[in-house]
Length: 171
Image (cartoon, rainbow, N blue to C red; front, side):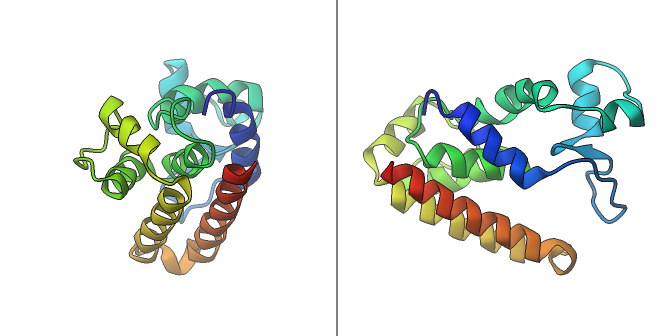
């Protein structure tokens, strides 16, 4: 929903945390949830480890807006639906949540949310959509090889996102 980006970014950054470089994580060097690869693409050159360590919320906000929020049409879907789609897009790419919401509303699951999908989203109960996306997201995580290492955190994040999104519907 329009005007929810800042609120959702704040919640997202609580999930993402600070600088990490876990060898088990395919994302590699990451800060505030932004991988070095994504940041390098954004700035158009290779960044240094120090630059990655020094990232601020103001540095990453435009990346999150363009690469994730805008792709899931966060400004055009109901409050709560925006958050559940956005958080999963950041965590797994925008195609997965787009396909999940398209299936939830009966659209062709092509992985790109357009005007038709937005229209169908607006006709459905947001709580139904949020619960559907939560369920599909959890099944996706449980099917990953890395679930044994990262599953507890992914599941916690998914559950928190569900609870926060449902609360946003009621506000």
